[in-house]
Length: 296
Picture (tube, rainbow, N blue to C red):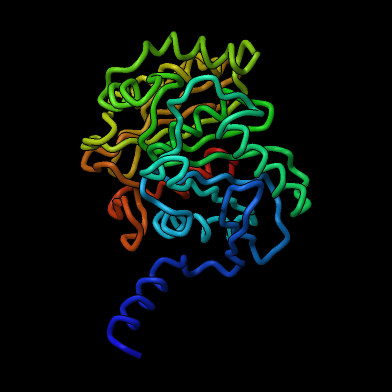
């Protein structure tokens, strides 16, 4: 084997998530490529939809987040939709395109893929947990507002409020912290959902040193979702090197949490350094998100 061939082989090996005992395969559905993790034990609980950030791939995202390992421990199936360069030259999800519904645009495509996987794998739980980073995080919020009857929880890393930017120029303005008023976003989300209260749990994370998506977006998204899910109280609780707030509803149930990791930039907290955009010293976001969203 030549030195070049050996180097390419090592790079390919590093891109494959290790440590999970289940299977990690690739597929294609109605023109959309995806990767799929299936645990080694009978699957239980909701399907997890994992949405990568710009420039990332499903394999890179799985490696960096260590989501497959966490899913194996919990018996969860995870589908990783892939965004191609034909859809966006930077492989970003087009969260800033207005007018998407549960049956149209990328929102519709992701939901159709999720339903396909649920049927194919015979999953009994009809709900979805959506975890996303950056552009994938913004898209996770879009999915929660578009289909709250399906999406029971979202894990958002470096995202922002619903419809805080429209079009490429609006998206950049939003990412810099100059998006729409959170109350306007909440009203728009509830209108899109067709409900008065959003029955979705949310775990929101952001780096205090993020220079790509301003941490002002965490505050805006927290305010927006607190209103949308009907939170009535909030407390700051002990955390692992982060500022952790928990919001509860009128029945004192935790419905929303936020984690601000001061030293972290645009990255996934507690991730594997072999993946892109990770911050290994931070609290383990994947574990904490799933614990909160699943209640276990």
